Amino acid sequence: MTRPPTPMAQRTAQGSFLNPRFLLLVFLGGAAGTACRQGLGLLLPDPGGFPIAIFLANMLGAFLLGLLLEALSHPGLDEGKRHRLRLLLGTGFLGGFTTYSALATGSMQMFASGAALHALGYALFTVFFGALATWCGIAAGARRMARKSGGLH
Image 1 (spheres, rainbow, N blue to C red):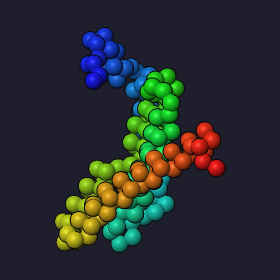
Image 2: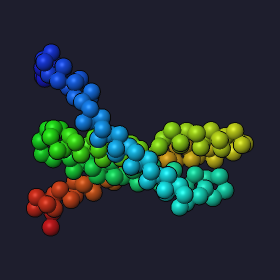
Image 3: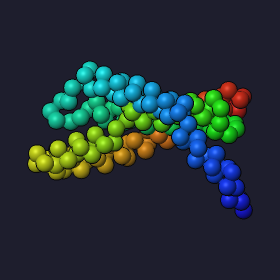
Image 4: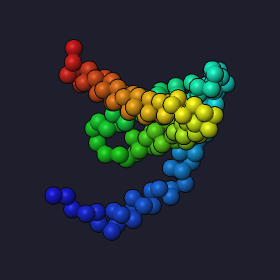
């Protein structure tokens, strides 16, 4: 059984979220991720109402987030460089790059235009394949870590 955190540990954890350096990392990563998603949208305009760029950003982002979190989970605590990378790349960049709010908006626009079945399919397809992409990222990260440590040949 684990013990609850001490009041000092709780204050330290709560205070880390207000650390201006950490907030800046998330801000910079988020700005870069959003810019990359916008660039992808300019490169891949929506063919016939299907938001392909948003779908691809969400799939790629889900895969990369799984890969990143698997890589950062070995070994040790979420502190120091590992914590800063998670905030910059995971919370910031990939949080800005992926956009499930645009998934919701795109689905509602399809629904409002009379394509209810397409809207439902797009939403379910994205969530299902996003989860699968995350799992693939985790599996790829685990395989890479096993190779690095000599576990797979």
